[in-house]
Image (tube, rainbow over all chains, first blue to last red; front, side, top):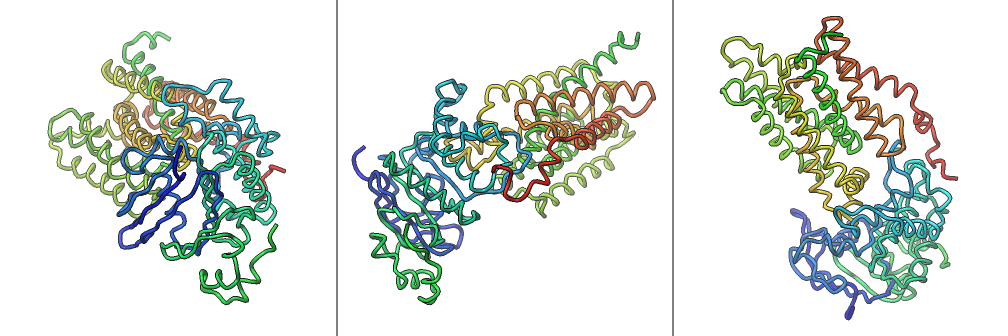
Length: 256
Length: 277
């Protein structure tokens, strides 16, 4: 595929009276690991849903993996995009186990009228091994901790063999240790496969240390875009989150 | 035993079998997708539509189907937007449908026995036509579940994830609502508008207590649905009780037993961090 993996050109998205994205222009090259940071309401989730073909544009163009989004049904695009959302509470009695949940990632690719075969189950078992969840493969999904469920979500995405990896606040609602483990896993996945990755968060302590690039968003706009070392300063973040510099410095953890 | 040789009893047994399977299968969706209040609203809509048909002189089942699908068309977008809780909108639709049902009942001239039959069902007077309709609906419901099992499984687990992996999750949601309307319509004469939703919900809710496998949940729900139907039929015949009510009470007893002996009861007391360690 020639050209960037993701390209947004002056994108505007509105929800009723609210402008969620106000003229966003962004390019993500193939293999990049981009962290998107901003306060709540900055438009980070909308950015990902636009890229995933789930949100109508009021203006602008979005080209993902060589195809313009919005021209036709986004389902074909979403089969090539792995999407991990924030950890959600799953009913403890839900009748599905870990292995079955990971297999969901292959359902879109399989298409109608096709059932999973042994090759598909082999892929599922491989990705479970990669994320360290193979010992819990038969466990009911609702019995897992939040961190474990997010590992399963990543495995589900990897089972799709995606060309693009979108993570929307995946470490929210996780404790510190689960957060660290998940960030390490995302880093490992990116490093081993050079999978184009966009990682959205509002939590400074959850920013992956190995982002190639950081994009700062506020009130539906991109306010800065560059190398992590240059952007992740207390002053920059203080302006982004509208809090005193001292408060920002206290929240940031040392780089890995 | 000679009673089983009579046409009416054979029809009733078949109706309980087919209706039990169709209702229980739909019930699995209702339980897993957290749609109980939507199902109730649709059942009452079907009842209102059927009464309109009786009042105006057209086939009540057509009225039932049209009204339940109309309710699905209004409720579907609410479910699609994630507004599934029993909030004001569902409450208004629910009470509107019930109000319309009793309005049509009140406006109906003459005796209201046909209408009341639709209220609490009369499986022992089911005709071959009623059984055939239940058979068609049961075959369609089962067939669609088998053919589109993986799409349904994904949508039922989490519609957002189903959509994210490229499945037509919204289409499946509306398909489930449509099948609910069709099943409710086909079951009206057997179980009645007031009670049909219990036969949809109870067997599936019982199965939910007993298994961590979705396939087994479908099988168990169908088994409980048929068991409720046949046991309720037998009890109502022997003790001369209203059949629809007896069937529903049996299904409730099955649920209570399943909940009491559920291996998942322990799961509720697991610590918030889960048992994954």
